[in-house]
Image (tube, rainbow, N blue to C red; front, side):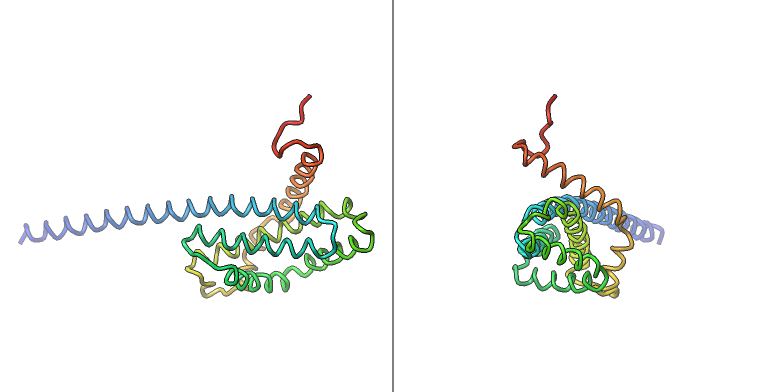
Length: 206
């Protein structure tokens, strides 16, 4: 009797130990994916912010930005083990964009107005609007990336929250002013280095 109970207890302890190991592995995988996703999102924020800021052609910057977002979604899918076609990525992007359009109408109006101004002045307003518009593009890509990451992390599902509440929660968790200020500074710095012929990240010299 005691021997049988001892074996049962040992089996239970072994099972608990294995489950704890599995939980630790799962947590590490989740954390590793989160860190990789953060780096990917930041890289695409930089690319989109600079593309939008530097493009003097009306509306073309917004079209280029959409292409960057599709690539971001595909890239994040790989991190979570999902190979999305560009059509599937566009479908997800349209869902996210619809929520952004409803929750961030100011963002879209500013971008469209800025693109219109670029056309009227043949690019003369680019210097004035570039940093502001680029930083807004950076901010929107941050939200897009985090929303896509949330969808992938739930197995390509929005869960019970749905896309609207998911995006709303992401918006509430972000420091809007801090992100925009940091994006403006980063875009200005990188644009300045590009204009001077120095590679990004290179020191200015004394």
